[in-house]
Image 1 (spheres, rainbow, N blue to C red):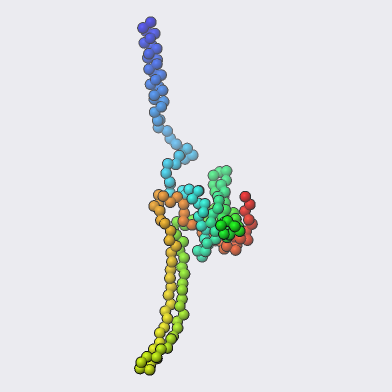
Image 2: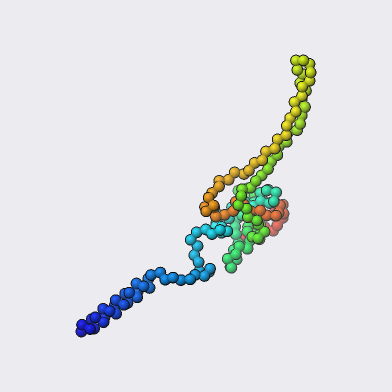
Length: 178
């Protein structure tokens, strides 16, 4: 009888040790398909942050902003829906553009404005009777659009996108229907 109790105790202990070992984390090899992201990798963007990113042309003229992304069953982004024109959503023309047609830029949009004052000559008569002249000067002002800069690890999206098109070309494209 003691032998049966001892055998049962040893069997129970073996089962408990086996269960405890099964709960420990085994070393496994994961493939690229099995990985779970725990932080941002270089070259990855949050799709939710791409919505609303402004789209410009090569002349730094604002064309519109990204309204939505169309994702294929394989997980790749096929098209980007750009809202062109309109005011507060009224009169906006939505068009679908292939994702690879956009160039993504991380720096803020730079705009240049120039203001030239024409050169004028204004004669004035001094106390000696001689004529003095005053000449105007031309000025040029360069303005950079100010944006709040975030740390590189916080910003999971580009600043803006560039598309080789004009606003009129986009408005001439067929309306994207939801």
